[in-house]
Amino acid sequence: MTVAANLPHLVETLASAHKGFTGLVYPKVGRVVGGKRHGDDLIHALLVTGFRYINLVNVSLTQAKAMTDADKQAIADRGLMGWERVWKKSAKLAQLQEWCRENGLDDSGKKADLVARLDAEIPGGMRQVPVTREIVDAAVEAVIADLQRTIDGDTKPTTADVFEPLLDKDGNKVRGARVYKGSTDPDAKLAAPVGTIYLQGLMIGQKVLTPAANGPVPRSKSAPLQVAKRVVRAQLKVGRYTSFKLAPADEEGTVNWLLNAGGVAACKAQDDEVEVDTTVLEGLV
Image (cartoon, rainbow, N blue to C red; front, side, top):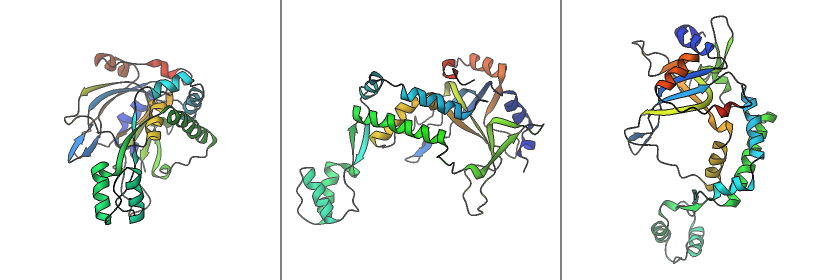
């Protein structure tokens, strides 16, 4: 399967960006919530590709282990909130009664009565709870464990068999890019059009050129530990690692993204006033 033949200019552009800048003007996919798509901003992203991911993980592990009590307390002081499930409609009567008592509610009556009381007090069974310092401490340890498992090779990619390397005209692998070839299971749903190139790199700058018409994606109701883990990870270099899907051209030969590499990418980013933070590259390239 030679996907590269369909987009020779793209392949050579990515190849020329080896250990350098890659600029991408790209419409984010966003997500449909309540029948409307949110978060589909048009962005200008500046990436650095060509480094080894395991180096990024190693540096990030060192960062996580070096987090001080002050660093952790600063996260706890941000007033972050998570969600916890207090009750669920599918539970048996005895469990619903217990939940009613725990929340100071009358526990008499039929299941429908208990559900009605609980739903009036805690709609949908979920309530917000603060991200405490204890949760932040647990999140740091969880992130450290996740990074260590990656270094030890204990994590197994679940999608490795649906990708193949992107090759340049000389048959060399283009680091930081891979090609989606689809699943060998004929009944499997395609994650993207076959031939889509996935570009992966370290985000060093981004600017929203056109905001999403319906605003950002609403925050999901994540557990407090997950909220804290996301914040901790965002403070590490690995938190800048990202991936973009560059779909093949349509029947008319057009694509919905614009790619530049090297000096051109840097100049275009400057033209669009993309704020760049190169300190994230220290120790990687």
